[in-house]
Length: 171
Image (cartoon, rainbow, N blue to C red):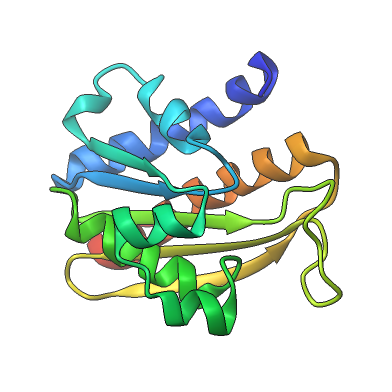
């Protein structure tokens, strides 16, 4: 990641932090293809210890199973890059933390790893809250590995704000 990319993501991370603090909620992250980048961006915000609990970097399928409780069956049937997997990752991050909201990311940043149905740039994101609300989506980002990862971080942060808007009723 470049300093410029982090500077672009920082205002979004500040918004996430302000909203989490205002709502009295803690965040946990479960990252695969972004390798902790969401965690880095949010902890760059001063005072983030008031609203960021922890992050899980689960790059391998085994790590997803061991640290987050992702089902081997889910991974076999849908693959690591699937909405089903990120839903389980987000739920596992909540279960294994003190957070009330979690975000999960898994994707194919490239240059390899693509399949005919999951090209480079395919990223699945999932969000979950302790009240049981959850959502997920699959996005297709253009660019090189770094650009795909940066766009995934931005989408993850924007999705947190969206979940918080629904939860708190604030736009």
